[in-house]
Amino acid sequence: MAATLRIYFEQELRGRGWVYRVEHADGRDESGPLTSLEVRESVLKRWGEHLLGLPWVELPTFGGVRPRATQRVWSWDEARLLVGESACEVALVRREDVTDARGR
Image 1: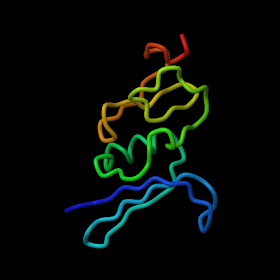
Image 2: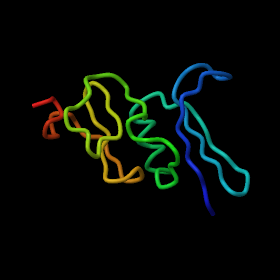
Image 3: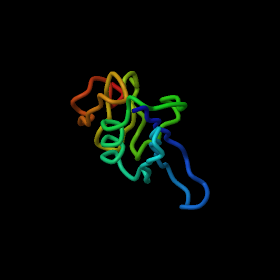
């Protein structure tokens, strides 16, 4: 069964902030706020293969300095990076474990 994942910035109804919505062909859906890197990782692991319509550069981050090297980096916070070859194959790693993550 086909599904569609959308990640977008909500400005109305539920308040401002990044949210996700998964829509299934049979009418079921799942949605919620993307409040942390852990939530983002979980959503992408479950539904990332169905991600549509949002360039990597527009995806939410959760604090910290932008890493110098951002290839395969989906998001970050002050201490960690969410990295992976594709949206459904992501993992949280400590910044110090990734080359150039501190801008060196």
